[in-house]
Length: 246
Image (cartoon, rainbow, N blue to C red; front, side, top):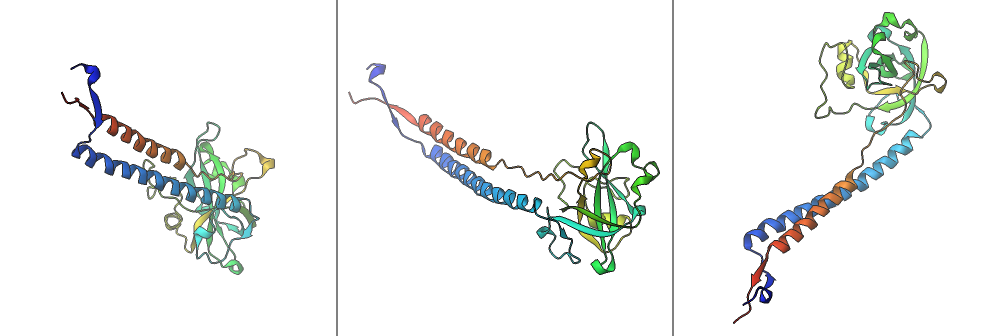
């Protein structure tokens, strides 16, 4: 009998089938889930874009649903509580380390009272002390226009806030309010809109930027590709030699 007379037939073993079929179904399910997440994320991006470009509205006196205001441009009036400002660690700006300055804003009684944290923008590290920037201590009534931002959960590798530390790693209105002994603080912050005429000047607000990673299409492609690859490997590995009858 010659090798040419041999043939191969697909004859899968029980164990290979029991392992492969569930694995392929799981991969297909994960790929489909990622496609569903893609539709959800695209809808979220569209809604956020609509909010970002909407006209500013007055910040409500009572904030029952903070998520309904997230990414909305708002206006808020009050007086800065300069003696209770907070420093939030910021991303480096043009290679320079620094902070973002959060100043509590006391709202008047006719606007419901209470306090709102206003993010006034980037502050170089060498100007973190109030004495080095007397111009930042704005007195009297002010009206701030900016974007509502909500606190985000800490990332896996992101350091947490430390009570009593000079600066904060992430926004946390309740903890910040307790640290500076303030009550009735809104569960959000308003990122002050920058003044284009001031360019990159310190404390010139925060450029509206919402980062919503959308990699679900790539993830779905990866899972579907892995499922297809496993099927091919399964079929090729389970083809066994057969010999014609003598």
